[in-house]
Each structure stands twice: as C-alpha cells, then as structure tokens.
Amino acid sequence: MEISGIISAIVIGIVIGVLGRLVVPGRQRIGILWTILVGIVAALIGSAIANAFDVSDTNGIDWIEWLIQIGLAALGVAALDRSKARR
Image (cartoon, rainbow, N blue to C red):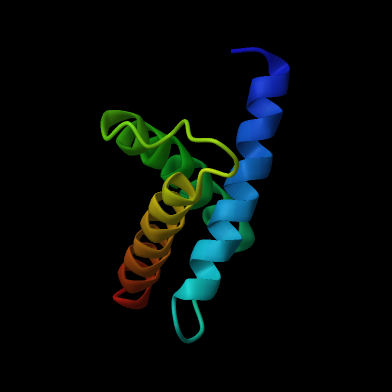
C-alpha cells in the first residue's frame, strides 16, 4: 500500500467514523481518535463485505457500500461507548 492509499484510508475513516457517530443517538464518551480508528476499521471491513456481495463497484456512487460502512461504524462506536461506560 502506498502513502496515498494510507492517507485516503485515514480520510475515509474520518468521514465514516463521524457519520457512524452521528447515527448513534445520545452522547458518546469516546474520543475523536477512537472514532477515526473505528471508522477506518469499519471502512475496511465494509469494503470487504461489499466485495463479497459484489456491490462495491457500481456506476456512480457506491451507496450500498457506504451504508454498510456507516452501519458498521455506528455499531463500533456504540460498542466502544458501552465498553467505556462499564468501567
């Protein structure tokens, strides 16, 4: 992976993480770095799932892939917030 791929993964992770955080209702007790990390992981896993279902490469914007990634980010943010709340 080249440096441009790493930078684009971070940027997409930020966007996906923030959108996932907006989907989760209420206040989350996790920091922005955790949000970015959850977003990057959700983007990678979401892309793999979209590839597995053959919906990652469509004409125009890949809405289904984005929805999968945002849903995974929302689940990740909610799970991380719950784990921090128990401590």
